[in-house]
Image (cartoon, rainbow, N blue to C red):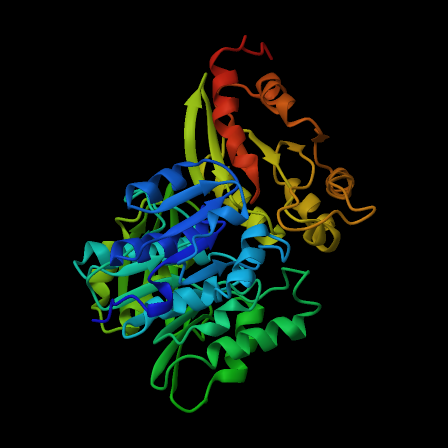
Length: 470
């Protein structure tokens, strides 16, 4: 197994080291013995975890944070050109490496599994990491969220398999050369980087073209964009294609998904035999993610019955329908969903898991460009809730777009018959929810921004409130 540190990565400096993708790479490099340093906007548990591994983490961005002997500067697409550490790197002639190139270098000499798709990447990557670890294969992995068990988003293992989340948002997944690739779905998103579905299709074509000769593509047989991709690549020399899903055309066919509260029981038809296993998170979409993970493991030569049992050990990943706690009879659950398809899937999963509960949603739109293109669909998704609070748009890496506000979502939600309240002051959200929630209700904080921070605040407010009487 190859786990040496590339020369360029011996003393890396990460700008935005606390981010989900960046911190994973930094953790693996630190475990391999690199002298890791970096900066982030604020203190966090991730920063503390990196320091515990020996990394130097600065808070705030300043030219002085970049050491003169840095071997490279690692950036993501979110880092702006005027970042002072990036400007200092140019002055010192320190090479600048994109996050995807750094991750690709860590996979050299291993057996990479790259998990791609518009939705479900983090969950599916996590399921594989847990199952392979449970089977004693000691994989390395880099994931966009913290696993509920190990509590980390990355690991340097001694085994030969490397499982990685492959991000299509900025085309960075074109840098990987996987032995097995998973494509969960293909939809239009990331509107700042893709102008049309044609560009999305072209990008996924390039990604699947990077699969090594003799490698395998595991792909949904149900989702229309994935089916179109399958039609284009099936028959490509040196590529094995395994379709999974509920379609009669699937090679790994889902025979039945049975909801069991906050879990599901899944039965698949594989090689002419029925195989049943448990998925310890609710929702049909997560059950299908588990089937994709099963198919990918089988493609690596791992016995299906062993994998099925190990997949049952997966207990979730941070921000993917993660139970944050319960207070005064109200459960608060956190969801990373920010695209209408994801929102609908998570809301339907919650409906199925707790059919008798009222569902209250605190939704924070993510990105102005996404809201401009999909605001109407986001509002329509919120109609699945009993009541919703909608926050202002979380800008992330984007500047405001004139005329684009969360009112687009609120108006669409109301047109769809939803009970929705706009809230512009996030400090009032906990009071608003405490005034609405009754014992037995579910509260879902939803979005890819900092709405996740409101979960504990809501729980505290519920703990000390005077209970509604009606």
